[in-house]
Image 1 (cartoon, rainbow, N blue to C red):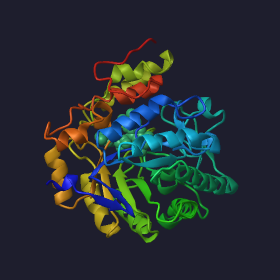
Image 2 (cartoon, rainbow, N blue to C red):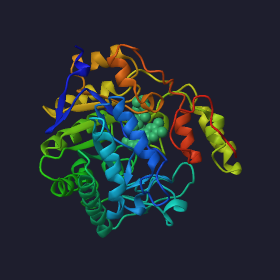
Image 3 (cartoon, rainbow, N blue to C red):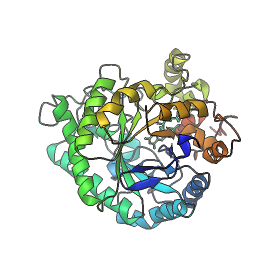
Length: 398
Ligand SMILES: Cc1cc2nc3c(=O)[nH]c(=O)nc-3n(C[C@H](O)[C@H](O)[C@H](O)COP(=O)(O)O)c2cc1C
């Protein structure tokens, strides 16, 4: 039997195969972040399709850390009854579910959160709306750390099997870790150790909020691909080593940032017209020119984070590693596991199109995913459309 279908543990949690549904924003929650039925259906379907571990889309831990409209919230105890239904839906089909908790930091908009976004430093304008973030004060940093802890407690109360910290893609934890975003001169910046401090404190806070033996996972950037130097694979390996020392249970390797390097994060086609049309008319020529200048530069390469994963793996010792990004062919997945480049194969876009892809693999019905990485699912976010495969085009009414 293929190693891909052999079980493996994350901490004490047994996962029945080596496939992870990587966190994927759904745009399916209510205005205030409460779980709606569409979310429950989506996760029941994915569990039925035999994804070993399911990580739903990122959940915001505080209203000021909301990244997108219709994102799921985990910022208040009132969210717990809805979140319970997601966990139950997955468990009902013998799946395992880990909640990804996130704070957007500077990577959000004033329209959404009602005030200027804050981050570790007031540095670099947002490349789309040109706003500069406000620097977080000491007490705000401590508050954010506590918010991560409270969110983790809620995840456990809702019946999740574990928690993943979103430390990638340019969100708040990534902002602290990255020399690109973090220009602080105090104990939160200035050296790798200082930039790691925020994540370290969050890990400790979350570990003490979680019941014993509940796994803690981290999604980490191997490369920020920011215009100036951010996290690069060697720094990510150092961070991974420090995370190992903190006894976390799995690192998932990703890359890129939503604001500064979206097509590093999600390589493939750039649906220029559909994306540009998602912005106000007066911004469209600028956005279109920018997107056009990227066309052909981010074509999907199979497993584009594997090389970085190879570098990070030894730093983790026995702690398992998952890798995400452009992994599409069964033969390649098998190689990654057999060669011990990673322990888990993580995918996002392929599951949007085929929630039952793992089952299809197991039944020998296919040896590749049918997702063509057209990135229209990504463009759909601009229109607040619920997640699904839009490869035939977006239903645009604008
Ligand atoms: C529509 C969409 C939503 C996403 N939402 C999240 C998210 O909530 N959290 C996260 O860590 N990554 C998110 N990602 C990134 C994916 O998890 C993954 O890292 C990336 O798509 C590369 O993997 P893939 O080639 O298998 O799609 C999202 C990607 C897409 C396309």
